[in-house]
Image (cartoon, rainbow, N blue to C red; front, side, top):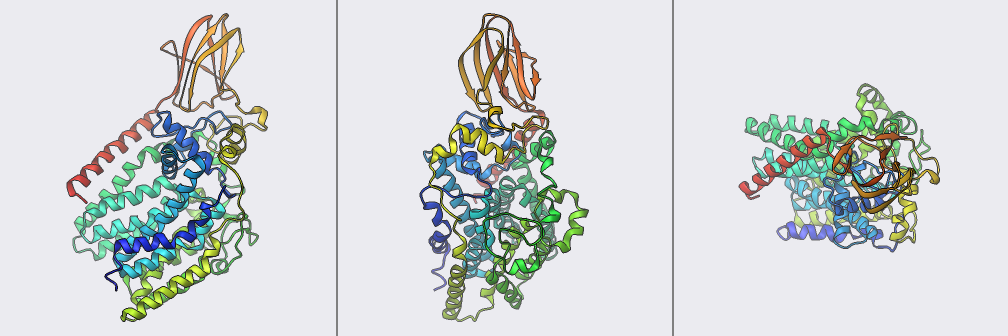
Length: 542
């Protein structure tokens, strides 16, 4: 019977059983979530790609209509996927739902690929479904709308799978690991930051047990460097240019990590809710890891499996980092303040607990009928306990136009996320201050013709009867350059917007987002590494 449980059969089983996790995405309309910007972000990404911008850094409608360098800082991978669906014909709402559903299902498939290496196909299937149906997974999808985080969770197993394949002297582990680690970075940089210590410790343990230590260190170094290089187009500008935005204002205040530690009993059980994280025990959302997850994590110790024991140790550490007992670590390591919410480590706790659940199959009697029966009972128990979490609080009977109309783009959604506006740019306080017009004549007599307004490039003609002055409602950010009649011109700023004087006559104006030296370097590094990765795939034919 176990021979039947091959790769295709297992993945088909995961796809079928994942139906209950993604079923709400098939409902007409959409549902509310904490980060209720997802449809707009997918739409804006698609519009930028359609206009010829790649990699996408700037979108034209967010930032209160002044434009916004969101994808220069916000991990873009899920939105490239969503935009792909939009560009091949799905409307932005359906494309967003597809992005959600694919991220959920990929988590189960990638966990299966990892866990089967250690526990066989049956253990892989158990681990995959425990990962897919973990309460924190449901929280990310149907409460928080944390697209980047649950996409990073989908990539996490591939990181460790790649490392293990390298340990087993399989060269394809280099490619698997790069896809996984670069995928985590490009999906959610905070998850990548939290992952690093666990990845380093795993690497050290594998070096100790490796038969060919030099080769393992060499290929692991390649895997890390290639992952960083491939994703450099995103993280290098994000790190070096974030000081030009308002993002540091997000540290502290309502997102101070000191106010959002989890109590240990909340890991075992806490009420399910659709509100937010609050000080003390006043949270409106759940931080439970899953009772069955925790029970099986303890049972896995009986297997004496080295991989399960390491995963269990990591589980304890990740849970510890969510609690107030770890505050001294948070205080000592200053960059951890960017994580904001210690309970984000539950993403890693979920990963380790689900992996441990798969290990339990090693402890079951060798008789196949019993092994199958117990595993099936565990999966059925999991579905019985956790399916109820995979549903939204309510459904909103909203269509595409409700999301991508001008008022929603430039005002309602812009208010939700404006932390990447240029540092000194005045934030509009009411809708009358929004950039409803991109180009305005503020002095003189003139008219505009042949306007072509793309997210990253504005071109138009101005027929000025007198010396005139124009105001471009664009939030200036390094890289924006202006040309008049083909010659670069110096402009001035008015409340962070671009102001330009032109003499009487006919003039062609071009305003374009160019690459800063850092962005050029980052793009070049990623391009070279991409060709390097393609060369390796061709050479090894993996």
